[in-house]
Length: 172
Image (tube, rainbow, N blue to C red; front, side, top):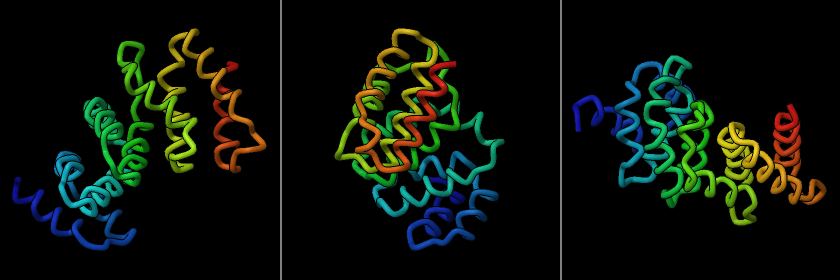
């Protein structure tokens, strides 16, 4: 672990507030924060992910270059917070037709339908599934079918809105 990563880790291992998050997002290197996503201490990992969600848009190419690692982390972490924040980071990356990972697409399709997932994870799963499916008409049809199976009257407002917006995009 580099000296800089160790310094950042000491800051992320405790409680931090939004001003700390914004400062670290401006000053820390994405690679140092990324290394801490895998830290054994869940608070450190969650805080590192929180800071990464505040990185400027100039970090998006860096995130795109690490898309596969972020996908793997989102699918394997036991932390709901880390999963949600990692999926949030993935919404900042583009999924090219050749980059679609069927395991992650299946994960997103399952998560968006799961009553066991938080609303945030379910909404992000819908968005990420749409971002992957958009390149293939047969996958768009599958996603539309699943979204239509979700009864709007049974969904909380946030998921209902997310579902409606994705269905609108799929029509175009």
